[in-house]
Amino acid sequence: MELNDLEKIDSKNMFRIYDQWPEIAKESFEKEFRVFESDDIDHVVFAGMGGSGTIGDTIGALLSKKDIHVSNIKGYLLPKTVDDKTLVVVTSVSGNTSETISILNNAKKTQAKIVSFSSGGKMEKICNDDKIFFEKIPIIHSPRASYTNFLYSIMNILKPILPIEDKDVYESISQLEKTRNMIFSKNLNSENKALELANFIRNIVCIYYPAGLQTAAIRYKNSLQENAKMHVITEDIIEACHNGIVAWEKNSNVKPVLIRGKNDYIKTIERWDIIEEFFQEKNIDYKIINSLEGNILSKMVNLIYLLDYSSIYSAVLNNTDPSPVNSIDFIKNRL
Image (cartoon, rainbow, N blue to C red; front, top):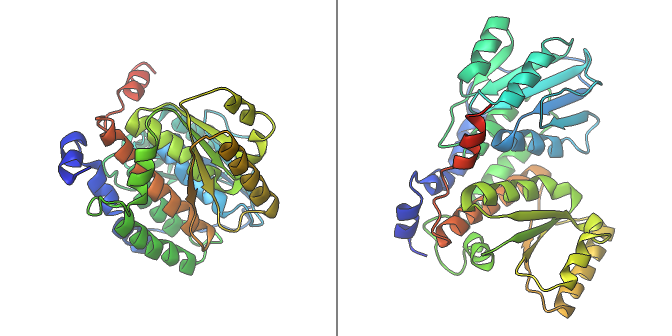
């Protein structure tokens, strides 16, 4: 692959936004926003769809080992456990997502605290009319490409209530810079792991993941579907050993990708070893993608960075423009 291939096929130059992700992350975390402060929050609900939903999934993963209950909602309805100690975080990059607007309107009928983020749209008007805490964050190219500016802006704004250390945030940004130098458009050679992965997958992909990295796996699925227009399967590695593994008894052109975490639980490591042995005995080619060392934020955003960029390369290798999502537009135009 050459740079002119990217420039020719990626009509809106999505790859150039990804080349800037580390700088976008740092600028977003250091930007002066109003911060949201509140006491007595024991339940956080993140509501968002698609690229916006990944932001809540990421923060939810960061809070998974903290003393706070997290719900991630991808749909129209709030959980019945919402009360006056709940914070509902509503995110729609476009500001016009019907499911997320429904959550916002439902949250207004409860005693929950509400914060809302979008680039404008209907959500901005609703929040301004009803005096709901709202912060406008610019869209950069598309919701999926806007991941870092929304994620790091929201972590900045919610800093008083999110138990996330600044040092972990800056470690993640430092690692993003290192990852960028390995995978970006100025390094289109055999050392580029994102490009190597894209060359491995050309048909249907089956992504295996440990529970702690589900967010990265689902994001990779979504990015392959939107950017490369490919069918994708996702499998929790433990659960797959009770059902999905049997599908490999038949010949298939599906390509397995194993997303392994550094410091995975010991029984998960055991399962990875068994799955690899199984694939080797069946002569099934597979690809392993390892997370970085470090804190969970750094692991998650750097995995997403590599996998997202790989999905752009997959699109270009298949002569597919990664930017348009005409099928999504078809659905939205009929809602």
